[in-house]
Length: 424
Image 1 (tube, rainbow, N blue to C red):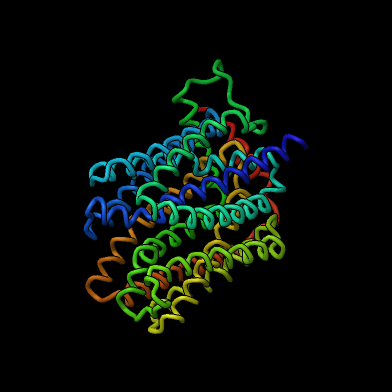
Image 2: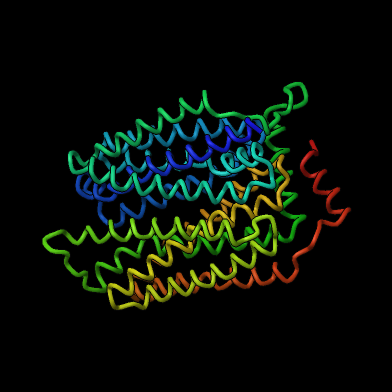
C-alpha cells in the first residue's frame, strides 16, 4: 500500500512538473521563433510537422522499449531529451537548429508517452487507473497555469529566459526521477530468456495481436484517428481566426495579447472543475460508462469547433474556445482509461504508444489539408471542416456502445493471454 501511495504521489508530481515546464516554454515559443529566429508562416508550420512526424515514427519503437526493458528508464530518458531540446532552441535561434530541437523533443516525448501511463497503472493497480489519470490531468492543469504565468514573467525580463529555465528544470526532473521513482509493478524478462531485439519484436507483435483480437480496441484506435485529424487544424488556426476574422476589443491601454492569456487561464480553471465532475460522475471501470461519456463529450466538441468557426462575435468565440478546451481536457483521461481497460498489462505501453502514433498520423494528414483549405476558402470553412471531421468518431462510439461485451469470451481470453506471453 505504501509503495502504491508513493508511486501515486510521484505520478502527480511528474504530471504537474512536466506541464509546468512545457507551459513555461511554449507560452513564448512562437514569439521567440518569429522575433529572434525570423520565422515565416511556412517555417512555423514545418516545425510542427517535423515534431509530429518524429512522434509518428518513434512512438511504437519507444513504447516497445518501455515494455521490454523498463518503464522508469524510458520516462527518465524522455524527460532528459525534452529538457535538452528546450535548451537547444533557447540558445540557438536558427531555423535548422530549432527544427532539429523539435524533432529531438518529439522523440523524447515518445519515450514518455505510453510508458508513463503503463508505469502508474502497474503501480496503483487496474482498479485505480481511471481516477489516477483524472487526478493527473487536474494537477497538470494547475502546473500549466503556473507555467504560463511564470513563463510570461521571465520572458518580460529576457525573451528566452523562461525557455532556458524550463529546459534546465526538465534535466533536473530527470535526475530526481532516478532517485524518487519506484518501479514495483513491472518485471523485465530475464536476459537468459530472451535476446534484445527478439523480445522487442515479440512485445510489439503481442500488442498488435491484442488490438486485432479486441474489436472494441480497434474502434478505440479508430476514434483516436479522427481526434488527430481535427485537432491539428483547430490548434494551428484558432488564434488566427480571432486575429483575422473578428475585432478584438481593447482592455484599457493593455495589448490585445492579454486576451490570449485570459483565454488560457479561463480554460484551465474551467477544465479543473470539469475533470473533477468527470471523475465523480463517470464509472471509469465500465466500458459502456466511459464510451457513453465520450460520445456525449465528442458530440459537444464537434459542435463547439463548428460554432467557433462560424462565430463572428469575439465574446461568442471566446466562450466557444473555453468550451472546446474543457471538453478536450475531459476527454483525454477517459480515452486513456478506456485503452487501459482493454489492454493486457504486459503490452500496455506498446498499445498506448500505438494510439499515440494513430493520433500523430491523423494530425500529420489532417493539419496540412485543413491549412490548405483555409488558404483557399478561408479560416471559417477550414474550422467548420475540422469540427465535422469528428462525426465518424461518433459513429464508431455508437457502434462500440451497441456491441459492448459484458466479459471477454473464454476462447478470446486464452488468445489474449497467449498474445501477451508468446515468444516467437
